[in-house]
Image (cartoon, rainbow, N blue to C red):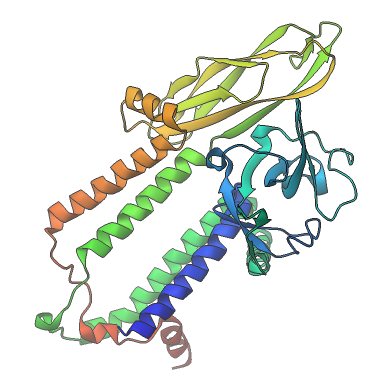
Length: 387
């Protein structure tokens, strides 16, 4: 393959990955390294459709006045991810405002932004946000097309589960199966009539095969650990009186609540539930959850002495139980992402090692030179239809 062809394919793959990361980040409510703005509230720094590098909050370091952050808004445009600038830091949280807005978000009814609300911080160099012009425009168009396809399929087939993140996974899986079946059918006739010259087979590198398998396994494992976790919010009213409502607590006193950790997968997990705001205690902070079962821990909420409404948070991180609990404890003490890296390294390294051991580094002979010359799938589909 020529250098020009290799560069072209690399750029195409990079473009697909960038758009995919933006769309997936919007579906998950957690930017995946890149994000974008949809409105003009941050002009002139960020115009509608502009992208930026989003550093995940756990590794972004401290948040201060002047930082542009992406947070999970409660009221702004009905709630959801919002990117605004921190203009003030108070004892109760952060005050935010869009650069193009005349008033703060909190003046407009948005609760004070807590540390647990912030999911990412925009990369800034020399005091200015690193902007990628029009990056989000492509992602928004692609996401709009996906939403339209999901809605039409859901209506046509009468299946609501085809909408949302889960529906997108179903559709992509189905399309992959259909594409494989069509490719196999169109290739079956020529495969029967063709005599292969095995002496000319180049084969496929075993490193490529096990590398793809390892990436698929690590991506699946990461999703299983990251998606079910996140932040749990408790809206607490510090009152002058006792109440049967567990979140209306007499000021200066505490209330215990059960926190349930379900595990829909087959692999056992360790879940860490930790306080993310003052007035919260969790015991125990680590629970083991078996496959297809659930476990629980106790969250204790303490109402401040001053009456009013408060937002208290706990964060849940979960990890596949493929490492000893003591090892995961030590890694978690370093950083919540450290066990993710170690587990993915173990799973990916295991697949690579097993593949190299079984295949012994020899090329996997999948296609001959002649089979490489066959036309693309869409051309063979058209040829089959119109012949």
